[in-house]
Image (cartoon, rainbow, N blue to C red; front, side, top):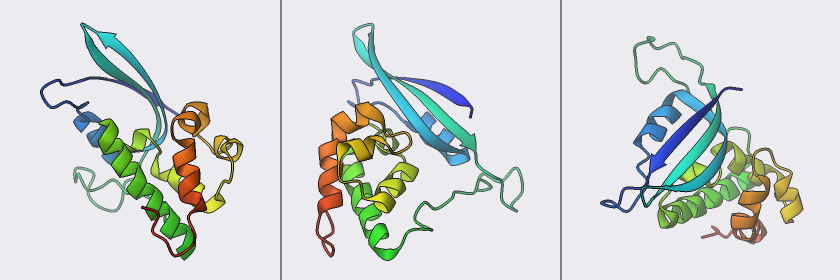
Amino acid sequence: MPIRLFTIPFCPRTWKFPDEDLEAFQRSHEILEVSDHWFTHEGLPVLALLVRYREREASSRGAGDPRAAVRTDPRADLNPEERRLYDAIRRWRSRRARRDGIPPFLLLTNAQVAAIARTRPATKEALRDLPGVGESRVERFGEEILALVRVPEGSDGG
C-alpha cells in the first residue's frame, strides 16, 4: 500500500492544526492507517502524519468530475446493533477530535470504528489486535473506547 507524509504546522491564530490538505486528500483516497508524530519547529508544534492509503475507485461519473471518487460505507455490512455502536463511537471521536484540535480520522479511521463495532473488544489486548489500532491509540483512547463498547444496548453512548 502506498504511503504519504503530511507535515502540518500548528496555527497560533486559529489555535488548530489546519486539515484542509488532509480533507482534500481523503476525498480521493481511502485512509487505511495513520501514524502520528509531534515535533517542534521554530517554537511551534508540528504534526507529522504518515498515512497509508489506497486510491478510491472511480464511479461512472466523468473522470474530471470531483464527485467521481466512490466512498465505501463502512456501516454497510453492520447489523443494527453494530451500527448503533458505530455511530456512538463516531460521536465520541468527533467530540474528542474537536477537543484535541485534530482531524477525527487521526483518532480512528471509519474502517477501524467499524471493526470495533463488529468485534466489540472487551479488553485493551483485543482492541490492540484490530488492524491499525496499535499501542499508542490503545494507551491514549483505549479506556474511553472500551467504555463505549460496554454501554448497555439501547443507550446512545454519549
